[in-house]
Length: 201
Image (cartoon, rainbow, N blue to C red; front, side, top):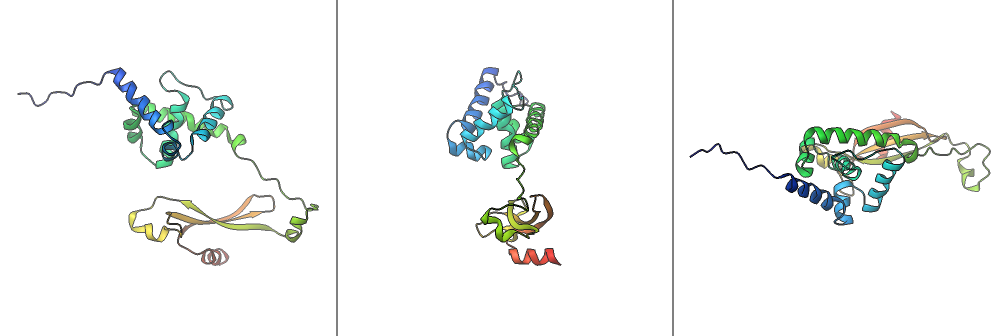
């Protein structure tokens, strides 16, 4: 008896159905599934695809349409997964996953001016009563949490009050809204006052 028998080859139409089912499950099954897969709801996903197609010029290739390309990229970014995971979930080769990931990423970068708006600075002659108390202000500072992946042993110190694993980042902006100082790397459990003391020392 030959134990080296090859596994039967999956017919192309079956592979196509598996690809379609994976995409449908991630995006169209429900808003919850879409959020879990891409970190955005179906409406936001549709808007992003529309912008990429009609503003930035992304077009479908012979083998992958725009929505599936965007889904692959967002799934990688949302879950920090490797190429081989996307290969398995979308039934695609590593070369196809890599090529389409880069195509979508470069196209998103072309949307920079559409997606990121510069703040309008408050002028020194502003007569809005809300800004009177900030008249001689040099800038503003605030802390924010940014989710991170850390080794299991470090997770307790990076756990925030809300239970998320994050780093606490202090940012300082000038009156034009430009960052002039950023202090990153503090654990999520660190108090803002402690981070401020570190910034001042």
